[in-house]
Image (cartoon, rainbow, N blue to C red; front, side):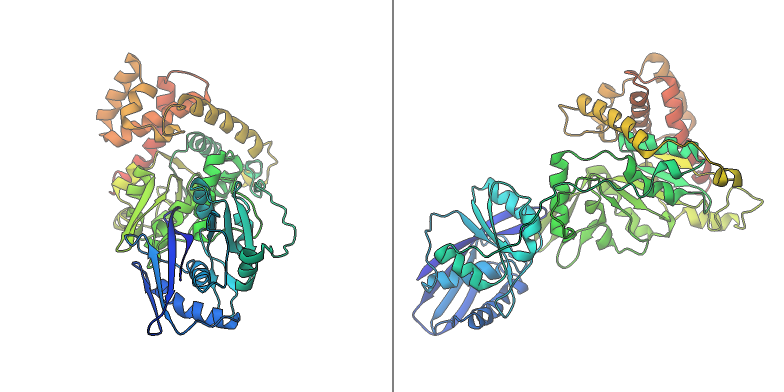
Length: 510
């Protein structure tokens, strides 16, 4: 007899519906699987055979043929185990239910018949809803993220027998009540109110966050660069629901969801160690998964001790920073993950950390040159702002200051974000940092006096076209913070200050 069961396969953070067909017919006993299958999918027949036996169902001595179509897509992962087992049982007439039911199932089988969790349940369910699927059987351990998909009936199951009982008699396994909290709580473990001194650096942080500009901090060890970076989440506004869904999809595919059922509402803050591999940073691997740049989508990617990262690894950031996505090609297909992140980096000015203070710096010129050569000019051109973290004095550390709280700063940031959302309502982007070169004149137009000023600066500092556009984008953000419609020379001068600093450190050594 013949049967078919619907399931899905992940491709990036989207999924494609596929069908598992089973045919049990007379002939030499044989179990064959076709349909452009990966090794782990081919191994499913042994897991399914043993799981069925241990659940009380022996496979008959007949020819069993499994096809998973469309055959043009390579099937990867262990989520096909459950639909494969149910398709066989249905072909054996063990399971009988109305074929008109729009039902889908995913799950990995253990040898005892236990159903184990799989990655990517949330994006699969969201795409299933778009394809008019009304019911989905999911592993019990995936129930938390599955409940986040509204508009589809979720059946969490622990064992193969639970699925059989549900499909035959509608017996839903008993579950404890789950309180679904759709939003994460604010993380205010680091607050700007606790940071003394560094007024210029904190001002630069507010500008960077207001326009989601890439940002580099340079300064001696102990100046507070890492502390300020870790405080950035406290001034980042919450995401829109659309952004929450995308970030939650990435977390689901990466299996980084927490135990509590909640959408990711706070902008991600990722801080990988400098020993991270290229695949860990941008994604990939034998089983393709998103990397840190995708996990930081809609949020911040913080690279502490920037010059300690391998140069070849850092160079991989260049294209994703421009395209806002990363495409990974494998023989099994092309996987695209979003990577629209705000890069925040911190570094010392030299190996010992005290250049250009020649009274403290122990590095010679060649040593400093080797240190800066770890960073390429094309990568630096993609950083919008560079600010200096000055040495913190004793009085700055011990005095009681009435510093602005993160809540106050966040309020101003939200206002600037709202200005940008209104301005870019008809565009595909939301922030000043994303203004395309074709739209620069439209949104960052200069008056005659300002244009003459920038022409002089362009020639004086030998700017590139990319750097010129970044100066205008940052100036646009500074003007928004001042609630001014037009960019003035004052805004341009402040924006140039955050580009002049990298010249101070880098121009003599790169």
